[in-house]
Length: 267
Image 1 (cartoon, rainbow, N blue to C red):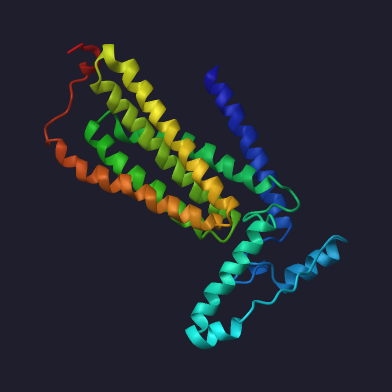
Image 2 (image 1 turned 90 degrees about the vertical axis):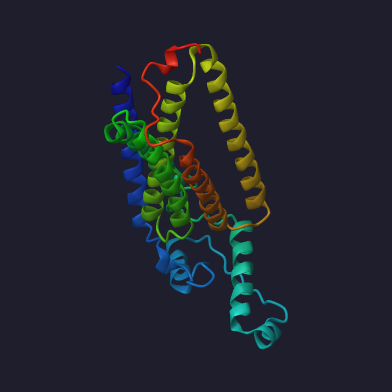
């Protein structure tokens, strides 16, 4: 019964995601609609929107002493200033990185769908690959951290919603893989009388970290930091556990594998 519920939910998610993708491409929202340096809407996109709707606006701004910046520090520094100003304008104007037509939640729906599909793929594929082998689980956790971090790095530079969705799917497949392997190993090596407390602490730590990261990210976004920069920082920080886990492998000897019944003992 539970499997049928999961399949039904997955069918709904895929159908909604397909509708959002259709709206996305029908609206012709792609990298060619943005200026490659500043990522603000370009002239062809403005003309397209002007013909499609009566509600539009064109803002003309001038950066004080911009010529002095170019003359004194070079055009590279001028490009940095242009990107910073454009990023502040996009953030404060409510621009969305992956907007679907006029929908405020279409792009987010696709990314959430990708997140759920990736979690399902990661959960089911891990058991098929590891086959209850602890050595494979330990290696799998390292690669899971690596995949999750690399995926968010890719997400930070994704030019289209399709690539962003694939990156999110891969990232959460890696996170799901690490979660399955780590909890399986924890359950096998924890005595019955301590297992509830150990898993309670595990869950508490997970949700405290998630809440803290979400709080910091939301304040950075409200302060004008580009969401792509936050995605890049998230990916790079996520690589730290991969390095720590790789170094921790020396704590296990090549022939040390806990017996299958270790979790059932009180010792």
